[in-house]
Length: 189
Image (cartoon, rainbow, N blue to C red; front, side, top):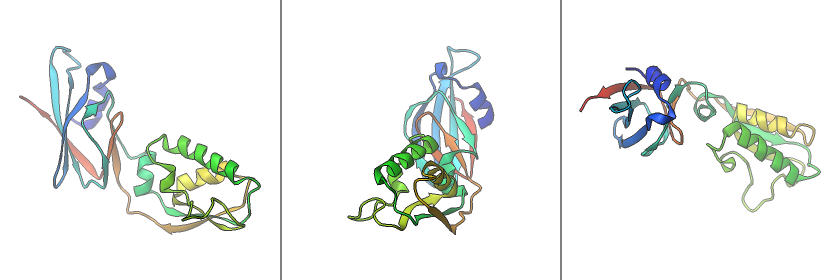
């Protein structure tokens, strides 16, 4: 059994669920679902995630599993990072914030909060003055912000660092694990 086969075979009506998660040297996820060939039987799997960098995983139902290297959850770990500065005062800072918020929601699909990236400062209003830091984070996200506010204010991207990368994300319906690799084995009772 491999993750691609499980991903292809699993669908919502198979009642997939994470039954247990164990944290140790690696992260072990125990997953079960109805057998796709015999709905009266249950198949159980142990998914071992190796070199975990981030996880939001818990017992839950899931009709989907995907293990991919292309997902916005990986931007934090695989994409160049930098800062987005502005050098002109916007006519309406609330409009700029609204446009950035909308771009953020589209790009991140609710998985990461805007507050992780936007610079609201400490006791300083958003976009007060003619220049300052607008946001920080992965380049694809900052590009989305720039595109959303194009024509509203002048912005400049300044690179800061490139993560090592090479990570993948294991996605369930409502949770995920970012790791280097995984091993899946079918558990027979």
